[in-house]
Length: 91
Length: 450
Image (cartoon, rainbow over the protein chains, first blue to last red):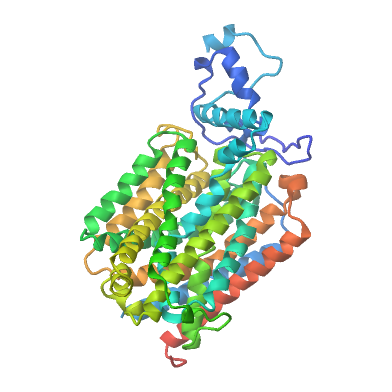
């Protein structure tokens, strides 16, 4: 079941969905006191366990999507022009 | 598991710690103690890195060659104010990257993919991989040009570049990687030394005068100079590195100092290459022809002496080497973020196999290209920046969208003034890249004359 997005006290959007594959936990190698020291210096949303969860998708309007596609197609067309001109220069 | 069961349970159940957490937390611990002790310079030392590396990494081989070629062909007049202006633009873009990385603790590719969908994420990663691969070829070319001055060939350039990549990430810590590259990047100042040694005639300084030549030449100069200052890899790199370093919203001001310092240094050193190149113009030297033939350092040696040539050659080696490290790192961040696996220098090779493989692999592929006999290396080097300029607006649009995303950024989202400047930068870059693309295409197809 997909995890619902949450908000932290600052109102920032946090994770939703399944975590990505992350490194093997090393909890068993850390002494409790050392572990508390480690945890104290990382923000709660900074742990790999937290950042490995994807943020939820943004909702884009139809106009925004069309504008992004137009920009993408435009960038590809101009890139092809530059590459074509480059190849022509070589020959 | 048994060890977890017997230990005393804390009040709040902590998340499982990874090797990456452990390494990052050790770095954050030093930041915390420096801040607590009011040691401002120590805090600054601990927090600088991604900004300087992005800016000095962009003062790479092709960029320094582009600046020097500008100076050799057109003097200082137009470019002396233009280069700082471009780095001011770069600061606006990179500050956004740093801020998004510090607030979200996530890289650019990761956020674009998750927030806007896999299609946009993979497009962004595809653009980056293409431009990075071409640029990395150009970096190896730059090392080769520098080494050629000392009578060394392509094989040495390849071995040097790849050895540095492996050496830099061999420690398994972001901090170590960053400090190694930072130490090397400071030698970008060699271009300033080259400028002092070359000392072009003061008559070359013609403020405000536009370069002459055809429209296509002017557009190529603009596009390649913009591409020498703001590029897609910088966006991926600085956001990914800021997150990997463990920066938090409390560090944003220091991140701004870091980025501003990088922009100022890169601007000064870029002007150094421009001034050194101008010696070829005012000294009646070979100009761009000298670079195309025997190499820029050789041409500079003829005009300004062996010292200037040697320093410039060493500068090209440094510029190429640092850029190989930062650009291959940005490719690694993008690839691992988009696939959804561990992407950190703080993780070991076993946990972040794809990250390290992409880091080394992209450098290896680029290195192999320069070993191909007869490959048009010089043309690749000079056109790498142009392609980066053409693809940059798409990356910048997503960057501005992320920096404005209030659900992600909360009170750290862009303000109106930043957006106005950001949109102006995107428009400027897009117009310059598009104008060159269309003009060169029409010339290549014979629709307009040269």
